[in-house]
Image (tube, rainbow, N blue to C red; front, side):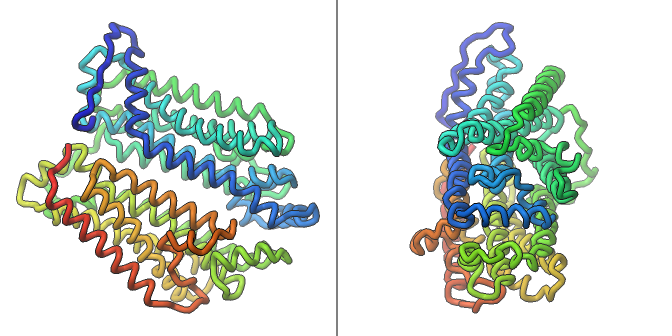
Length: 535
């Protein structure tokens, strides 16, 4: 609970849900930045797709050609799933549905873990529980807050696509909300089992990653339809709901049944453990401490995230690299598609332009890693764990430097792994691909440095860095497709980078972005050094 915030809970006696309304209002107040940002990113991503698809595949013949390509290209099916209809609505559900569901799942797990395990880890939950608050009120409030976070973009998507068919729009919206609900209850179960918020986020994210892999493997397995692996994944259920293509409404029962079952398990587990503990025993540490420096502590806290992101980038690089030679087949004779790939990846050959566009997407996603890693400083400080470290001989700058080395150095590492994956998947010389990935680093550092600046000067506004990262992601992803003005693209630091491989290296923007990142980081560290430690 932040300083100066009063949380009044009415007496509830022995009622298990007493105080849920107050806790829900408090949770929504704390998430007044997180939820609107992720809602906007999800809704805009989906609602911008129909216009782009109409310009790409405006005629029935072009859409029929796309369906034939998807039937024979297993790599593309693995990336975006099969196509079930040739209408613009069906193509929208095909192109954006799985990714919108994944964004809803990420939002849900962040919200649930933040208002359950994070609250217990910081000690605030124990303070609240000492009053007359129901035993299951915090968990209920967290799940309701996740419902708001997932339901709002689903409503916006339904309203925005209703003109293309109310049944299909409703199916897609309900599928997005259902995916979020499944992973919200998954996070609720994991939060009861684990003893730390970091482990809860990591395990739930691993479940989401496994769901994506199962969906991709099932879609790539056969041309006649999804294999049984697709039905093991909630993301597979979303695409098999078949919005705008003879909807299968019964698939919604899978979402509802899974969410109810997992919610019941979470409630049962919540009543069997003490506040602040997890049901899974914690692994005992070594008898003698082995963390002699602030940098070693930062690496110990963040190594799981670095390794997880690195493995994901490596595997994704292999997948996209294997698709590079099929870029010409994907574009076919569609000049509009070729123009979009050229705007995203430069004016080199179509294969190099496609690789450059995919490298740019990895850079955008790496910016999310940088923000998450930098904001670990904010989490350590807000939870009170930084204060004992700083009470000793460790200075603030040395403490912060350990986390920033992991954040900025980790961004370089995961991008290099993406380049290595491209080389393995594409079967070409890794040198140019590694160079292309490294060219994304200055822009990633700028986004991370903005998070450092916010944390150093205005720690309560540090989560706004997620809004910056979301805006940059949206501009880089949707901007070239919609052919937005150059002035809008230049708002993002990624708009100033050279298009590699295949393009010319312009060192001026690269050096300018690197200098900007250094200046923003220095300003943030200066603010951290001068202000009080928050709690």
